Image (cartoon, rainbow, N blue to C red; front, side):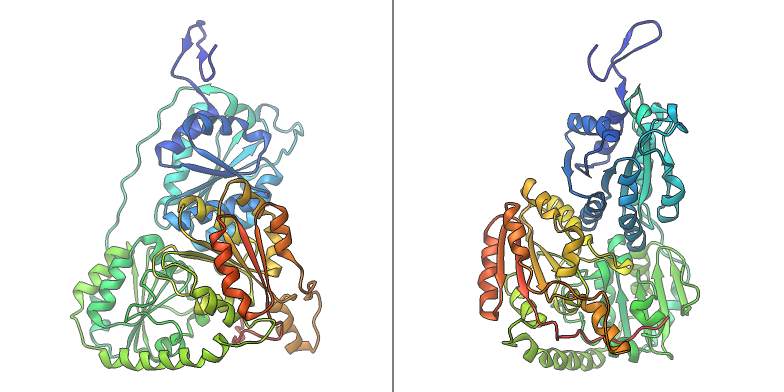
Length: 550
């Protein structure tokens, strides 16, 4: 009997029946999924066979965490669900940190799990554990499919829910025996998308109309809503400066006259009305204290405020973000706030000028700012940049310029190191032909550095740029400030990580002097291979930050 066919009780073949893995893959394909990220596991063989038949590319990594982060990288680059498959037991538990990260980032990923056979459940099969109790708090939905005829519907249900606002991760697992069974099932149609503007527009428009110094802080929720055009129109029509964080970076180009980055403390602190779009008032905004105490706060998001202990908005606009921004822009009359913009621009220019000495610093080992000065001259306008590290990536978040949505990625508020290589893999698969630049601290490299093997095997020319200072700087410097000493904060100095990449089949460069950097970067991007430029940076340079207390 042909693969994918089954016999009815009467002995007649049913040509419409497919095995469970094929049903799952068919459902993925009909929702537009083209790539599945995974690490090989026997519980997933049926799914792999289905993907092969349906033309879905299977990208295998070296650790399940990287598979889930690759799904997140795909989603961040495309604003469509990224999909990974993790084998039963330790495969799923290895992906839990990535699920938690996706939950805090609102990233639409679908995690498909293998599972021990349902028919022998409770007998102690290999890797037998119920995943749902420990993944459920991290995802929008968690489900086990126990009937092969339900596999297609459950699979698209997980995809559709991940993509529905507010976006986020979902989980679905298939017991080994169930996913190998045959069934005949149709894939349900995709749901309609879109939403309505929030209630309360009139109150918010009144606040905005009376503002002399409004400011916008927009972030990841704006990106997932696809509301960058509405944000730009609101900013331009009403003369409002814009600050961006998270996945909001690039939603207004860095060279737009209303785009600011260095003056966020001034812009939000002196604002009389602050419009916060898709950004939680968490530690990144001083739990709300970053906005001046006397300012009126307009909050725009697709879901109610979950941080109820922090600052409460004067106008809380909960609804479709794009429609809400458009309605707010139309309801408030345009105003000339050129004086406010000019004052911020002068301060912005002054702060940028103050960086010139660090950007041209000739020290060896290098100052991170010198590294980013040289990197900025090599990156193309649509390059995708992924940050994975502590102090080193903190500098990047401050100075790397982004010009298009979906071109900056980092771990987000969960702060999970090791996320970078997986996200870079997903982004490179999603955007072939683009520069993909992975910024790594030497500490972060230790979490998932062997994913460069994945990049080599799948011919993904990702260029890693490492700031190698031989310490856990994010921990060493604050601990020494508090106690006068540090513990568990030292790494081996000047480790030749580039040689590891060369041994894996990639391109490696070591940079000790500032003059060596740009040629090394140019060779790495021109190599057409996965590459690592290992830049020795000065451990004595401490990223300036304010202590944030709970």
